[in-house]
Length: 303
Image (spheres, helix red, strand yellow):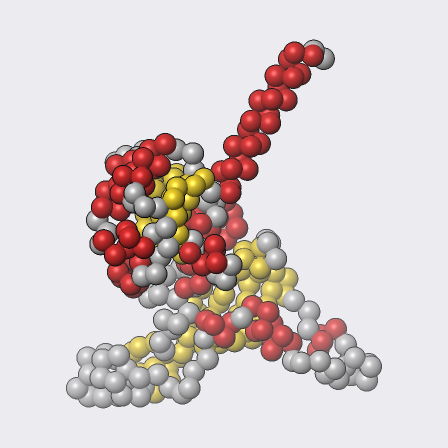
């Protein structure tokens, strides 16, 4: 493992650059990586092959409170929590966070030792940060990347990334609840190959339904609304029929790929909405037709 050089290790006392001429490196690093979002600060860094490793401390406001009785604990030691974060300049990023542990001194409390709350960083037991889980879901559902591709980006296994995606999907839909459907005017519908997400049954395809309202308005990104097993007209129509009339009446545009089943489902369930082909598939279809035209011309004219 190669440690990242710092001004103190590169410059000797008396050198022109031996005194700080810019913000402390820690502040710069924390700002670039946006670690404040995770509730940690960087203390050291190193390169481990293709992976960038950052050692971090939790940002705390004092000793933690016992989850059993609520009283402040006494510092005992610390443990290191390792989690994957979003890639940096094309390389996997691993955070090694020092998490303080405390002793509970309350006689009536069954808890003897507990760790400082780090749920801002990651869900309990999770192997990625919260924002990394969101990154995985966005890459799969919105960018239509494969699980294998995202696994390479994070330096993790296929199974790990798949498990992260499933947990993130469940958490998103559970936390957002019905309110996630409020104000939706433009929806996107597409299929995605996502094996094992809904068990061993089926062909591994899901229908991905996204909110494109802010994208069309030019001031936001796509939001995942739901994942439905299958890639049929019935899959989409069943989902649309299960929504309340206010949602269906509010949808003005449905963007999709060229699959006729999705168009039929949208036309049946949302008769007042306009169905269009999304730009990605328009470009893909145009490219395919140009290839066919080029091949025909080459065949007719010869070598």
